[in-house]
Each structure stands twice: as structure tokens, then as C-alpha cells.
Image (cartoon, rainbow, N blue to C red; front, side):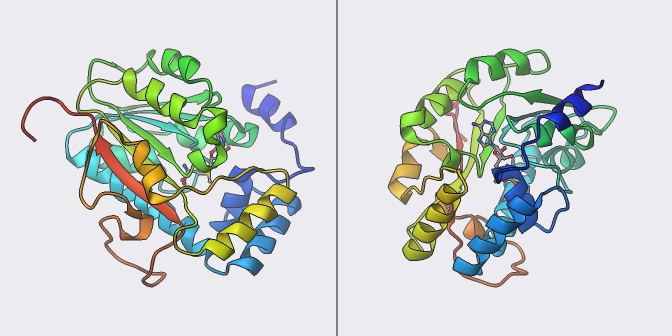
Length: 270
Ligand SMILES: C[S@@+](CC[C@H](N)C(=O)[O-])C[C@H]1O[C@@H](n2cnc3c(N)ncnc32)[C@H](O)[C@@H]1O
């Protein structure tokens, strides 16, 4: 049996999983009735939830392209999700064909689809690690096999940390990962907030909780604490839809996820 087949055997279709609900919101096919049911319940509470998922994905694309064009050649993406084209390595490698990308997720459905994440440029590298974000030591050890931690790395935690509560180690895992990275490394982060639509978000969190999924909303100041010691790239911490927007196919206005990019100081003038 291949690793992919083994992973497929561990897919639990009796309860919703974040990666699959997100896939449903993005119009994907890798979800189950239980995920669709929760997606529809969230949509009934907040008709803008699909727009938020698409805006989040677009933020990831803009942030990764910005960093690749700025010279970053290594990307550690934790909480990758089910492949959705273009995937992070496709963005990074279209700007820098030699970019090295390590994907990490703890959901067996992502592992089952990891082949799509491993088709990169001949010059570059893509690797997949099945691991939990709350175990940063294992992630760093596995990533070190293909990455040079003496050179800058873009650490991407996009729509991940709202699944990790503070008491579950959210700050420790970010601090541990950043501590291992060289000056010039960057943190690309997006996470849910109730700052814009408190009632919808409160009801959405309750619907996820009823499905067995814990979600945490964070204020702008709370999101800022993940960037302590980093220099925020303009425009700082904004709704993901307002971070260097290009086109807005879904219309204007904030969505309920903050996004930002911060860089570890190099000691040299920027
Ligand atoms: C909403 S999806 C985001 C996917 C992608 N980063 C994006 O923003 O388009 C969240 C992903 O985080 C993963 N995830 C949640 N908790 C995790 C954990 N503790 N360790 C690793 N991955 C986790 C889920 O399996 C899911 O694939």
C-alpha cells in the first residue's frame, strides 16, 4: 500500500474537517457531505464566508509573490490545505524557479492529495511533511533536510492559527519556528477576527464548535503579538482583502481574517 492509500484509510468522514470545509467554500471536490453540511450552515449565518476564503487565498498568492520577487527562495508552509491551483509552490516558482517549498499539514486528506503539491519546477524543490503545527521541533527537523536555515525562509501560516488556541501553544509554536530562521526571514500570517462582523463570527464559531472544530477569533492587537520583534511590511495588519489589493472580483470591504507579513530584522538598512 502506498503512503497516499494509507492516508486515505485514515480520512474520517463522520465529522467535518477544516481542510475539507475550506475546500467546499473554494468550490473544490475533495470534501464529504458532513463538510458540505457545515459549510452550508456557515453560509446561512454569513453569506460572505466564501468570499473570505477566496480573499484569503488571494492574500497568500500576493504575499508569496511579493517575497519571491524580493529574493526569498525558501518557503515553509504550515497548514497547507487541500491543493487548490495555483498552489504556493506554483506562485513562488513562477517568480523564482529555484524556490524550495516545504508543505506541512496534519490532515490525512491533504497527504492523500499531496502528489499535486509535489509537481514543481526541475530547478526547485517541493516536499510534503505530515506533521502537527503544535510540534514545531519535528517540522524544523524534517524541513532542514531540504532547506538551508542559514538563509531566509518565508514561514507561511495562512488561515492556520485560528485552529490553534493560545492555551494550545499558538504563540510558542510561532516563536519556536521564527527563532530557528535566519535574519531576513518572513512571517506570512492570516487568521480569523471578530473585529469586523462580531455577531456573524460568534455564530460561525458556535457552528464549528457544534461540528467538533475549535476556532479562535483574534483582535488586531492580538494578531500583532505574533509579529513582535519583526518589521511589518506595509500596509501592516489589515483584512486580507486590503493587503496590497490588486483586483477585487468579490467586491470591496473587509473580510473576517487579518493578514500581514513581517520580516526578521537583518541589522542592515532595508
Ligand atoms: C483553512 S485551511 C487553510 C489552507 C491554506 N493555508 C490556505 O489558506 O489557503 C487550514 C489548514 O490547516 C490545517 N491544520 C489545522 N490545524 C493544524 C495543525 N494543528 N497542524 C497542522 N495543520 C493544521 C488543516 O488541516 C487545513 O488544511
